[in-house]
Length: 419
Ligand SMILES: Cc1cc2nc3c(=O)[nH]c(=O)nc-3n(C[C@H](O)[C@H](O)[C@H](O)COP(=O)(O)OP(=O)(O)OC[C@H]3O[C@@H](n4cnc5c(N)ncnc54)[C@H](O)[C@@H]3O)c2cc1C
Image 1 (cartoon, rainbow, N blue to C red):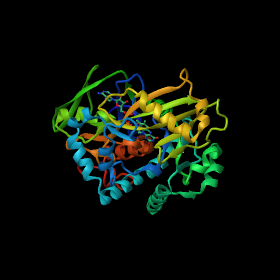
Image 2 (spheres, rainbow, N blue to C red):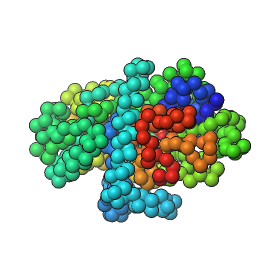
Image 3 (tube, helix red, strand yellow):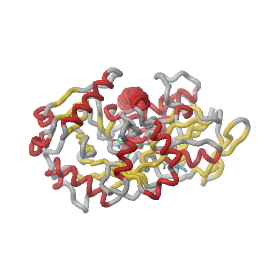
């Protein structure tokens, strides 16, 4: 039986891998020249079950309204985007109740913990090298009230498998000595020992090579124009290289999934939310953090990736534009320097790489995995800020569904109907 996977980001490539392992004939259609060259390319690099809270949370609608028009806001909705997203926006607001937020957080945690295990298994089986570090993540807080709230959330999630330990300021500095100079501004932190870090692009290209060894055929440089109906379902994909037929299809096109599925009458509530990363060589800063640091208040991640350091942050609703905004990049770099003054040594305009990608965000903040209203079409998309964290597990779950098997984890909450 032949399956066509649309899109070779981390989610599509992981799905292709698990389908090929099950003995399917698999083809992947990807418009770029290789795997993981869009949102899975330059993301923050953190595998964090500790960050599973959706952005649709109590109080967020009011915050977004207050942030409108503010260039340095953590989540900035551009006025021009509003008319196209009101339906999505109403669903987002409906998910901001305490009850929905907790339920959605637990759905994400279930998948994130599963995905971590699947990633570790792939790593052991394939030996893919991707600048992995497995020494955990430190989240820091400069406000005592936020720290208290963060600990309460971690405690709540620990009931469903999240591991954490509280870190006072001395412990934060012990784990990340580069915090010494600004320790007096900290209230404390939380350490998540099972979180990992790695380069999502390197991993995905390595996985695509393993897929090819298993017989998966990649059609790179091929754009999907639409799906063609036939029989009781989808018969073929119309592409820039002609029509391609298969028995089953998986749509894993990230933020672009709704654009292709609406052609066959399926509405997928995913909206692109732009974020930026700045990647710099780390050599100029020998005392740089050995583990990722997430700053809860200033909302950035500072992540060691091999010999590089990557800073990530910003959420900007601006349609499908993927130009890194100079003002937002500068704001993030300045925030990092305010906590780590020595980071300034790494930021050289000749070597710094500025990148932006669009996170595929659903109103609930949970991904859509599983069957669509069309019998032989499946969806694996909508991973928002957590696609690297949940990508491998998603591929494994969706491949099981395509094969008609019971997924290894409870799939409640992933269906399109739940969104
Ligand atoms: C700034 C930033 C930081 C992030 N940091 C983290 C992090 O630290 N940890 C984490 O877990 N997640 C993070 N994320 C989120 C994560 O990167 C995404 O959720 C994830 O990459 C989504 O993967 P995907 O495979 O669904 O989508 P994509 O990677 O976008 O893959 C979809 C693929 O489909 C292809 N495609 C689209 N349309 C077509 C078409 N018509 N024809 C053919 N091909 C097509 C694209 O080229 C692309 O390769 C971050 C995201 C951003 C933007």
